[in-house]
Length: 173
Image 1 (cartoon, rainbow, N blue to C red):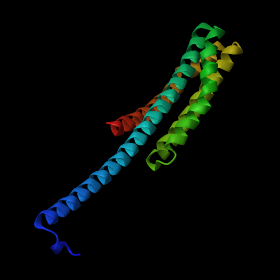
Image 2 (cartoon, one colour; image 1 turned 45 degrees about the vertical axis):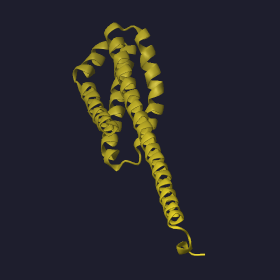
Image 3 (tube, rainbow, N blue to C red; image 1 turned 180 degrees about the horizontal axis):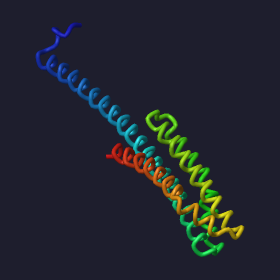
């Protein structure tokens, strides 16, 4: 049996059925593609939000370390060392998480290396001044702070983290 054996009505009906099946197949394929695109977008957005949170966690830890140091140096009150020590304890995990999230992005390799150096230098500066204060060598501790190396290290850290956050926010838009 060939299509020509069917009546014109049947031929048109078969043609419309074939067109309908083709349209339906196209709609299903488009829906599947849209689901995949949406899934990729959602995963990327979630990843960028994790990066943003990690950036802020590192910055918060460094600020807490600096605040504790300065509070202790100004008051000689060991209670200021509580937040300092807590932040110091959290920092390695937070740094590691940020580095892990950005490890595959070559454009961040140098800024992250620069930031790591600045963090290490800032931690050394805070430890030294706190140790001097504990030893009763307050004038020497204050003199180290007045040299502004710690401020310079924090500025370097803030600059890198701010750039990372700005890049992340741009990608979220």
